[in-house]
Length: 114
Image 1 (cartoon, rainbow, N blue to C red):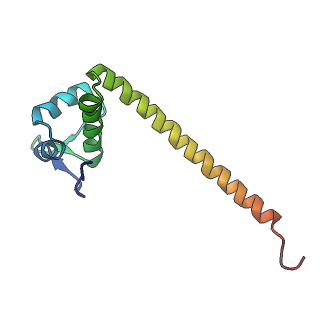
Image 2: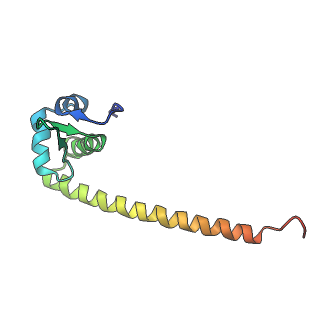
Image 3: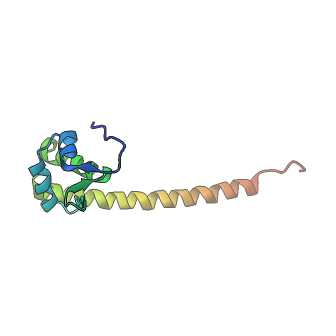
């Protein structure tokens, strides 16, 4: 597992070193994967954020370790995004249920004076 330093922006060279990829690979993946969109500095230099590095590492795992094709990796990432959205909805529903259960528990707890 790669330890991503705690800073806001990374240059393409830093990301290249962190992820063990050549800069041309990162530039190419930008054209192939929509979620990989680093911002650019006023000088036009790519500036990656932590979320971009996490995306690079996910893509690298799919392509190099799990042996997906680029098209297959694109489809798998789309599926994972859908699952993440469902998980976020599930968390919200569970939090709501928890609130309701806590309220019910308070209603049914005996008071000190009974």
